[in-house]
Length: 317
Image (cartoon, rainbow, N blue to C red):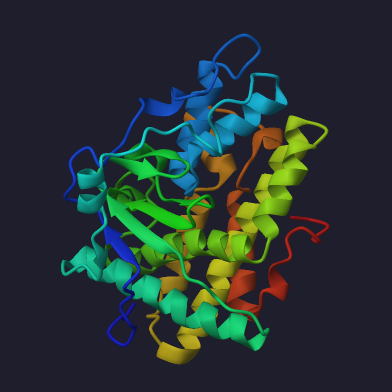
C-alpha cells in the first residue's frame, strides 16, 4: 500500500499525549444497569469483546440488549457526562496533521476518504462534511461516553467523530491474526474507512432511521439483524472508498485486498463468538459473519457505488 500521493487531512485531533484523556466513569458499566432483568455480566463480556474487535462502541451493543430485555434505559447512546475543565478541553483540542509515522498514516487515509466521499456526494448533488478523527491513548472523552482502548475504534454519531486508540493496529496482527507485516497497512486503512462508512450512513440519514427501528423492534434478534445490516453496509462503503481511491491513486499493492478480506474474516461475529465462548449464536450477531463481511467489502470494492451497498434490501445478508 502506497500513501505518498494521498493528501493529509487536517481533521485529526491528537490526544495521545493526554494521560487519562479526560475520561470519566469506569469500564463498561457506566450508567448501564446489571441484573434485575438486565443483561448479565457474561453477556456484557461477550458484547464488549465483539464491540472492541469490530469497531463499534460496546456501550451501543450493551444498551440495545438491556433495553430489549427490560434492563432499563441508562447509558448507551447518550451517556451522562461531567463537563471537562476548560484547561483540559483546550489541551485535548490539538487538531491538524500529526508529525509521527502512525499519525501521518491515519491523516493520509482520512484525507483520502475526504477526497473520495466529497466527490461521490457531489455527483449526487449533496455536500460531504467530513468527520474529525480523534487519536488517543487508553481513555478519552466522547459525546457517546467514555472512549477506552478496550472498545476499539468506533464512530460516535452524537459528535460525528471517529475515535481510535492506535494500539488497535497492533492487535489486528498480534491478537486477531487478521494480517501480517506490511500487509497490515491496508487492513488498518480498512478499519478507518469502515468507521468513516458509519459517518456516511449518518449523513445519509440511515443511522437515525435504524436507531428508531431498533427502538420499536419486536425482539432482540430483530434489533440485532438491523445492527448487522448497518455494519455490513459500513464494510461495503469501505470497499467503495477503496475502489475510488485505487482509481485515483493506484495505491494498492498485490495482496492488499486479500489482507483486508483476511481481516474482515478474523473479526466476524461467528469467529469471535467461537473464540470467546466456544459456541455460535446467530441471533446475537451484531456485525455479520466472516463470510458476510468479506462479501460486502468485496461488493463495494468491485462496484464502487453506494447503491450497491443496500444491505437492507438484500434478501440474504
